[in-house]
Length: 425
Image 1 (tube, rainbow, N blue to C red):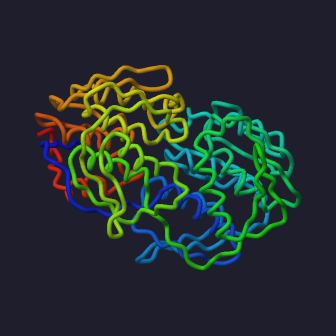
Image 2 (spheres, helix red, strand yellow; image 1 turned 135 degrees about the horizontal axis):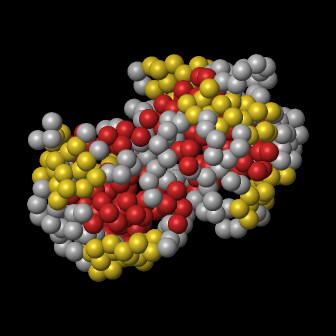
Image 3 (cartoon, rainbow, N blue to C red; image 1 turned 120 degrees about the vertical axis):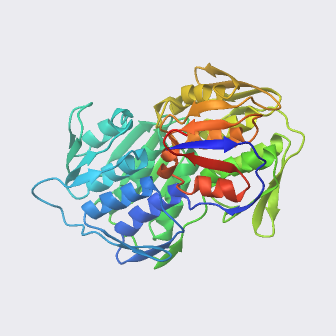
């Protein structure tokens, strides 16, 4: 599907989508719990549907109701016979979180599409194989994981993916012995591990922090709290913060100020860039100020790079976003994709080995671009399009369904003029 955007200011009020990161973790904790859990969330997306589908394949029940889903626990009995087939779609979170969980039950056969089969799994693969798992050879797909996870000492580099640590931390408390999970500094995206620990704590599971990792007592049980509301998503809201900083005012409801989501940093960064952003009557209010370019180490907040790039291309001066080498292994090579997609609109972007250098302008000419089959690239292009002098066509915008299916509906609520192009017209 293609969208034609006629540039118009973005201003008004919207509700943040539910946090994909929080919902993944709560779905898994609920499936490992002692009794059903009701998750209150307004809407879903392709990645969450992938996690729900895989949990059902493992034996959990995911029952929708008008305000969310009820998660019925899976049986913890270890299975014999054929491996369950787990279709992860294009969700790296689903694969990395559920590999250890499936090995509590004897394993699973993990499938998926897009760039997922090419995304890295080391050093998680090696640690699982050192603790009872047998994985099919690297490069083979579907990925078959057999065996049962054993307690012990797990040690991985901290600068590859925080999802490796989160998946282990959720599974290890259910083993019959204690474990230690150690990271080799630095631990990047540490806020996401904190999200995992907070989700587990809501189900009564304890983990003891150490200087470079965690001690995980075994023989624990996940105790359902009965009902949990899924908080709003700072990663998706980051694009509206960028839009508010470029024009606004924009008000966003549903965001928790004391969240563990690392992407909450977008509020501080928009202020640092010269915009105004502060809680106001239950909403986060963002409005334009005199904007300045930024020089930011984004190693702890890599998912903010697309929103920051959309802000930077319309902020005069040179912005540098550093520490983002991991973005080359996302749904797209996001550094190359941003340089190409925003460059097609007239932006001046130079790729660095681990980031971007962006020479911002007051406005962009516009033109035809594409979303690289990556939800965050599409959203970045749409926010930048609002600051163009001429119309913008974005090809293949359906990728937003991965994390934010209602993105263009909310774009229109803010006054954006985005029309679906039918039959190439």
